[in-house]
Image (tube, rainbow, N blue to C red; front, side, top):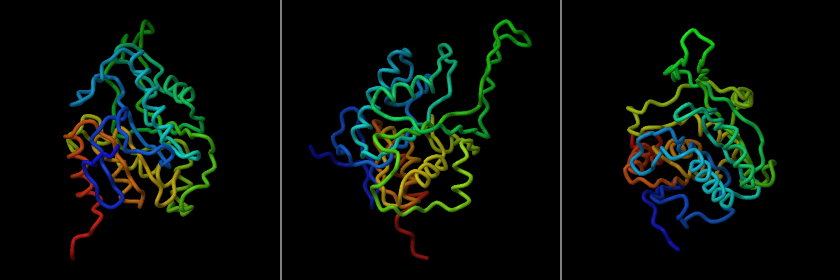
Length: 260
């Protein structure tokens, strides 16, 4: 079944569709999935209900992970940006639960990167102030869980890396510190910074590899793909976010440089 892309330029493509229904991605065609799925913390997305029960959220996560597993090559990888935990609607071990779901969906676990968001404060509640009665412990970090399909050693693709010595030394340390992205700057309620997918691409894929983001949002993954010579595919259900992403690509990572 043929599907038209919302945006297509060079090796960058945006598909305005649902991760569960699209037929535009072939099985075994993707080298690396990088995504930050909805967190189920009542973020006001245009086209997604982010306030279901935790059980519904886990079932939703299982379904989309199984689709991504199907799309990945045998040596394909998944970089999953998720919360460590959450306290909206009750404390939940989100990172541990989603990692378990990924393994049940067929993925193997490799490692977890801790992302320390330098400019993000989680200080919205302390629970029982200055009391052991019921304090809240809130960590201002997120996780990037690194998983793979069948084989961790990557043998497909160009086998050409573009990561520098200093980048490799710094990024193989599993504590990454850089700022999050501001919603008002991007026009999306939950953007992640381009730095996150850029590091994942250079560390876990080769030049020319196909990188997919099944919850593309504001397009950070595709901006990074354009900047570092990867083939990028973004799936996004909301047409407004597709427009934001295509405009960001043109503005932040133009494939054709304007005449001097």
